[in-house]
Image (tube, rainbow, N blue to C red; front, side, top):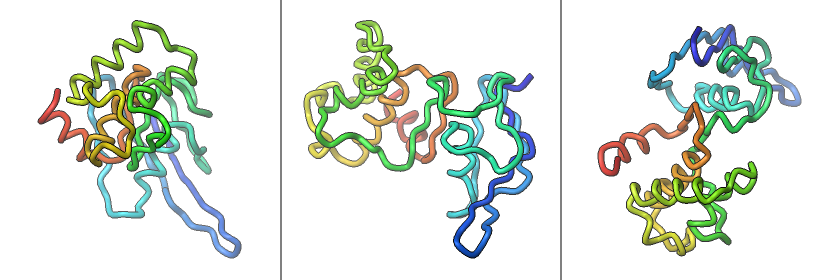
Length: 172
């Protein structure tokens, strides 16, 4: 069985006077260890698909399944990094990378050390006590990636694939 399955996914958005078809008849299977890219022009539904996989929105029809179970809400098994970094401007980088651990009540010394190690791999450990406004855009994106990875998700969704390529080449 595939790790992730999208079966006959359709998504419609309703406005005051219209129905917008965003996604029609999407079928996809992803196995363990696979890296899949969704490529298309702006506005074609890539982010909508990722949001349905992450459990942030539900399909109008069809099923999204992770390990055979229907995805109906958010889960810590899925890490989703959006196009913007969404770091909290009033928290230090260290606090930002641990916010997911705080929210899910999984903050332990071991998990904090793991997050710090990731921050070090990204070349940002010396910035742990700085505020997001003190970092460049790329540094902020890497900090946001650390925040996503710190929760140790089994599935990672990235809404900006060039970030992964940059990090893979330069830091990991």
